Image (cartoon, rainbow, N blue to C red):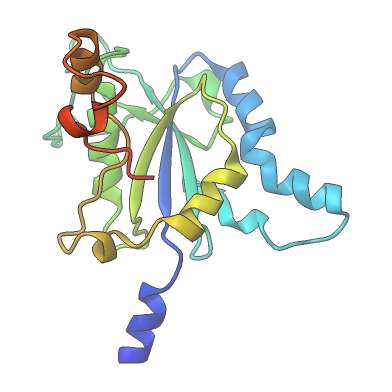
Length: 212
């Protein structure tokens, strides 16, 4: 019905957050789970009462309909024969593969079937994976797909506030449903080439974002 559609459209947007990591970085992932991924559990403990917010943040493996930010650690474990990026997976080269046995106790990590490389195909392959699992016909549909590195300290409360208060559903910003937030490498190149300056950066530089 029209009412139910309006209700769905007015729901807060949902985000799939990929935390880029190395397969061997177990201790770093442990610290992240204990800090900003545990933010709402800590807040509820500090307030000595349940504020029913911890359900808003969940791992991708434990995703549920009330989760607004689903996270997953993203590592690459391909061998020397694996591609640097994988945009056209098939039966011979699936997007993800099992991780190393020593990481079997971590259920919030996915392992991309590409070679580990800091500056090349790992990130595009992550977005390809995220788009593959997020679709209206499935059990998971996300309005925004994002990534952070595992050396980034994320303020979970601010991210959730931005998602709930500042970000509209993508189709309400752009009828095509395509919205980009962030910067692209061409910005830094233009800056280094002194094509932009403090006074006119936003007017003369080819920037796609940030939108918030």
